[in-house]
Image 1 (tube, rainbow, N blue to C red):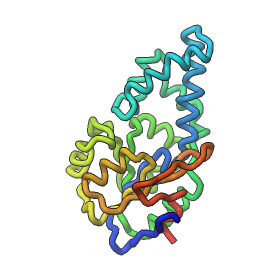
Image 2: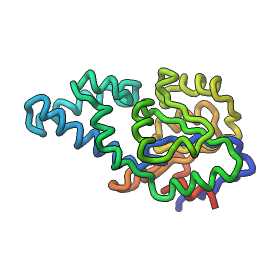
Image 3: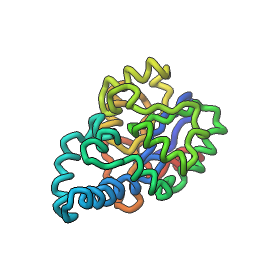
Length: 221
């Protein structure tokens, strides 16, 4: 039996929301990095696709969960590709997860402070914002690149709370990454929710240690 997902909104002042896999369909990013980039890397390198994937996979795994993993400048240098241009050319594929945009519209009516907290590179965020309205739904937007550590790192939350003061006991944070939620829990954020299906093209993830939701739409009546 799944744990109840309802939130006691009378005890919430601040809502922190992840972007990719929480509000936006992670299907785009998975496709972009696992299929689109390998195709272009293979063409640039004169390799067949299988060989390109074989070379890229260890490069990706080596930095997963660190700032370079999320940095399109790093990948442009590492791969010899103009990653921002490639991403901008397919930005029309970026989409909200089911119910996410409606949730943001309803959330605005609650009077809670709404903060976007993402590991996305600022330019990636700007590119995606060219296709989906994001800024209008938030009181503040923060990329972990401004803090020089990703959200998985405990130091992120210490630095973030200085720039964006909030009461962890009266804050709701929603993310699809368990390592990120673990770091937020260690910092003391009391109300945490994990998105079970960040990618609509894949089966739901199994969530054990957190209250799981299929969509942020479940959080508001």
